[in-house]
Length: 261
Image (cartoon, rainbow, N blue to C red; front, top):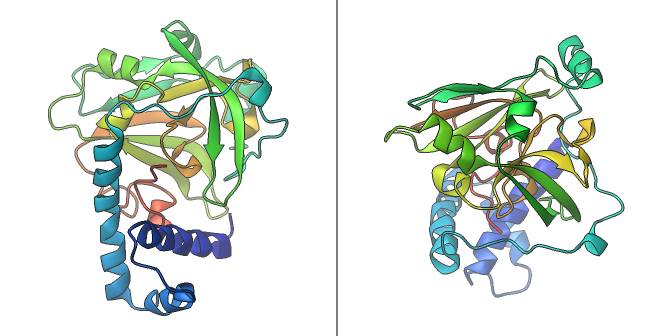
């Protein structure tokens, strides 16, 4: 996504947040908002509403509210592979061409039992299949069938300690400047029944453009939260010391950390 798109999305999210709160009720308010966006103090106040939005949504929807699931006939004929290009390193391409023989998912941080999983290890764990809609912050949607291991299965194996509050997903893809993609969710969303580490899409191994060999599906949030090309998960107490401290690649560039829908 280009910078112009990012700025538009940021404005759209905050505008929607205020609109949902009933603050905007007159025509021409977006012009007013654009003026406010130039004021950093005002923008800081608007961003602080994100936490209120998250708490409100979780209060009214409950801990285990399921995102809508669809039937086979609803699967989209085209699903846009968004985000950074695949990680075209020799190691990645060699693994992709030979079935991921040396790829490992490392899980560490504030856990009692750090672990390393091959793709076959993950496939041997109980799996969940779900047909869900991917909603992109850019405004498009697509439906696909995903299969993968529930993240709560991984959590049970590594046993997070009491200090752990977030899971940070480190990825293999980078932007044009070499900045690696990463994302984070909290333990509550990680425990959700539909939060999976997907290794299949529409009945086939996860395609490279969609994040092979493993991507996150957190169906109660917008698409930019669903990290692709995952190589490591770290349980942390805070993400303030990671990258620019906002909890994700896009969050570091102005997106909200909580993207609940």
